[in-house]
Length: 285
Ligand SMILES: Cc1cc2nc3c(=O)[nH]c(=O)nc-3n(C[C@H](O)[C@H](O)[C@H](O)COP(=O)(O)OP(=O)(O)OC[C@H]3O[C@@H](n4cnc5c(N)ncnc54)[C@H](O)[C@@H]3O)c2cc1C
Image (tube, rainbow, N blue to C red; front, top):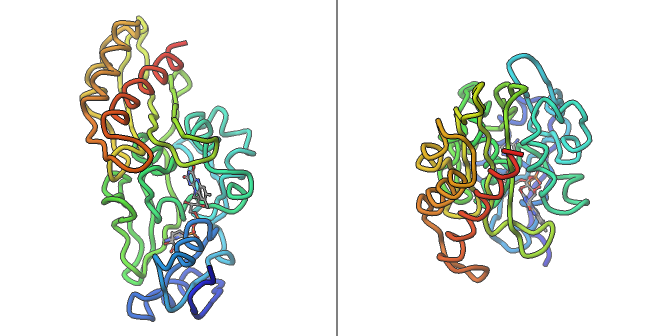
């Protein structure tokens, strides 16, 4: 389908971009990789009067790794993450998750900021942000602010962003060397959005018992979120087969799955439990 008509601007400063987004009574929209927005335009699910292209904004393409963790600029693409060897140690869970995003061409254009702002419930990046307690930096006409990932995602395709705000960076806290992690998702075809997915990590103590468990799910419900009952079932336990089964059961009981043309609610619930078990088995190896 042809796109609806719109004006186009390609500012070279953040201030200019924010002013443009604020200029059209909330009818303007940012565009980054275009991999979600352009299909939405084609299907008339979005009809902005003005598209504000972010690609010339300086300083948003960097992946910074420091003692306090990993900072991903909003215009960092999936390909940049997969190509960055430093992330193998600095954030292996991020890397494992992003390997599942879409197809080659889409990974060459799709961005971190675009994925967070789009807030698809079945997207990997929002789940990693929530699971890892990431903080999202945004800038608008009122200035800059930082939003915890769990407060940023409000529902399917809905975030805490105001129409004039731009995501500039996401900060993932530092990754301890001894941390264990697992990532599992199930999609009908490689590269499709997942029917369900689980990201988890924990820090084993000297005796091998799990602590500081973080278990996040996506694709089941209206947004990615952590599963507190499953985390409680893991904390303080030796990660053996009995614990793994109990954590899987707790995860399955903690979700509120939706039914759609792809899968029934009971199937998604069962899948959540199975993926949790598999992710935990991988983490424990
Ligand atoms: C066939 C197909 C399969 C896909 N499969 C997957 C998948 O498996 N997993 C997955 O996670 N994604 C998948 N995607 C989506 C893809 O990863 C997108 O690239 C991503 O979700 C959006 O990033 P973008 O840079 O393309 O954003 P755009 O399409 O440019 O924008 C998306 C939305 O975010 C807003 N926006 C963009 N950048 C910013 C910013 N910095 N600040 C504020 N608002 C902003 C736009 O206004 C728009 O509302 C798929 C897409 C396609 C077409």
